[in-house]
Image 1 (cartoon, rainbow over the protein chains, first blue to last red):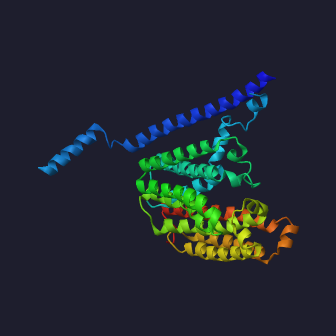
Image 2 (cartoon, each protein chain N blue to C red):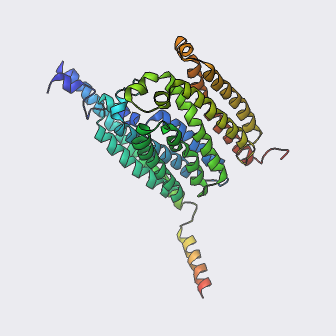
Image 3 (cartoon, rainbow over the protein chains, first blue to last red):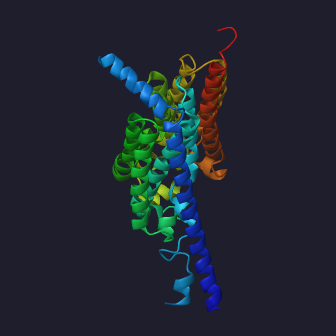
Length: 61
Length: 313
């Protein structure tokens, strides 16, 4: 009887932990996706940066 | 520790994941997500699809956070009302302090991440919405004035403005019109509900119009606000938000909504009691369709614009 009851409790906790785990995994995926979306499209690639610096240097001289 | 205390789902700390999810008021979230989505897509500035998805998610989380904070603060009156007695805090499945912590953490998280994903105007609007719903509506207006849902309705009206701001970084006439539509829709929607869950607000001594001014006055208020809403909703059809599809939707639905309001106004309390508030319940259901259809039509108009507009325009 007692064991069955413990199982019920553990099942609830396992479900909660799995839910929190999934939320954390989704959070990581979202952070990754946001990073790619923000810096993607070559906007921050070394080549673009170098070209930007060259333009800034050219404008400054 | 007895068996009962081990197995009782009401024991603090034994909540299931779905109980925490219920704290976020998922049904209200549907409205928030949909209207914010429409606000974002109706905006003339396109947004990166993934950032758009994130923005809607953070707006939904912010809405959910304010729901959790509302459940923390209102646990005492929620326990007294049949409609809300099954919520996680009054039933004891989630501790009130946990609801507070979850609400605060998710509020901060949603505002910061919406700001980072899109812009700080959108983040600031979301922060103001949460503040308005929790402090102005829940803590102040709800328990002190029958105008609680009229003014408090602003909180539920902000999401399309936030969606628009997330895409464009500004506030415009179009986004304010979408705000006004939801703002004006809220009072008749809630007063119809208050008419058929009457015992609830009495018991909890929440000063709803039905409690403070009586049921006849509430019926009059419903028809007045519905007429004002109809003028606004149909008038919006002639602005940049509207178009033929929106206008047709608005004309049909506002005619039906006005008819419903007139039916409610003409009924006596005895008639309503006798048939179990059929007309009031029908009006409430129609109000849900009303809002979704109006925003759906705005979405269709935005889609037509993206595809090059109407051939005759």
